[in-house]
Length: 392
Image (cartoon, rainbow, N blue to C red; front, side, top):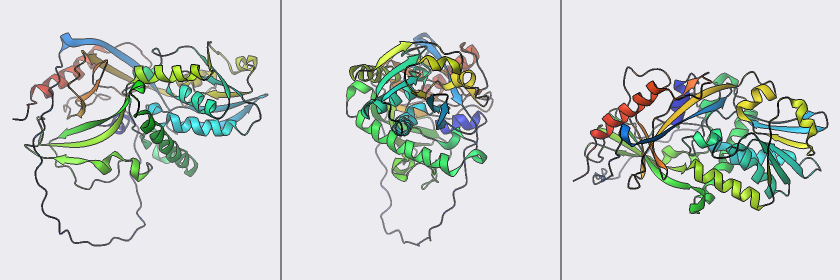
């Protein structure tokens, strides 16, 4: 189950209609039948309660009308809003930061303030620096204490972050451009180990017969960025999971702690400054010397800029002792009695541990660990991986 499904389960419906305007040409398949691939010999994850090292909670800033990316005047200041990604901040931040920097270039001042030090704030700051701006980040917290540090993390752009009836052509255009730029930036970072960005295979284990030519999971994402274009269907005997089928898909993964620390280091190396400061009202912004302010405060915009549409979607991840030989992600079936907001098996291997489970609890402001969710996520993972076998 992917993040698109997480948000859908939380009450956010992804856009399903996709009108095709092309003629269909009939072809004759003269290819020989596919040859079964050899069984995969994948390391079995060791998931157990005694191997838990921590559980983290983060609140995704969600808006039913999608993220905000626009400029507005505030007295003598220009505020460029860049927030409300609902769990896709890692995926779209580089592109949205580039668009925000482009808006800033319309002004003569080359000093800019960025509010927030998570993924959207840091990438916006770097995009501004690349265009010749002197940038100061004003923030209440820095990595590892940002919401971005608590994310599953990867390139998973999705229109599930916006209600279908709220979409507009202008918003769609921003989404496409942001996804395109972000994908290119993350690809470049994947070439260096210091950023914690890398390619990984994900396996969607299922008992349902996968469709050979599935419809696009997200029609707004340019075709060459869609993970399903490289999907492989593995049948019985071709994979070690306790399901009939497994769909293998390559994708870009991000390790938040490594990635965000590297962005902070880059920002400081290129002359940036970080100031720990809290803004209670918009009037507090008038004291800043910068005339251009990029707002990346996420849920903070609810009070700071009176955005009553913002709501939290609570996420929760449990991390077990690292297991370097596990180098793949897994999404498996859940239970029929699973409570709303919880999902099936989810495993994300990182150097800091095996990340298990997730949560999408809409409207929940609590940062406390939900022990019921923790146990449920661990139980389904233990049960699933106990049925996994090594290929002979």
